[in-house]
Length: 92
Image (cartoon, rainbow, N blue to C red; front, side, top):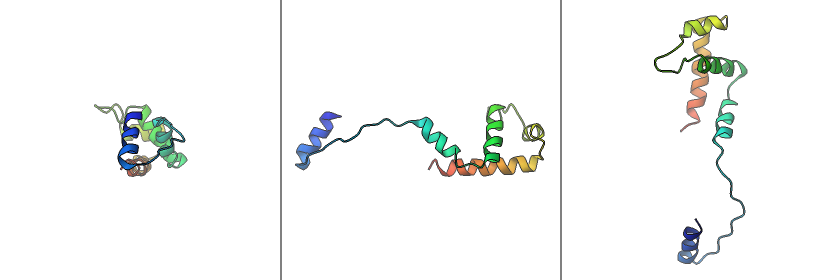
């Protein structure tokens, strides 16, 4: 990296001062995306992930997961799809 910066300084006749170097923490990024979900959406999304809903082949059905949470399949899928939409719009 030092060589690349030196080349830029020379080519552009510039002085580059580095004030901070940090690493990208993917876990914090993922956590901030999940924080966009409502408490209920997060509960349902986590329940689906923990029980193999996103595995291939799928280890759980929406009907079974909804039953675990004592809600209808339609309500379960509504919360899950809204959560997925919020997450997917952040990945662009």
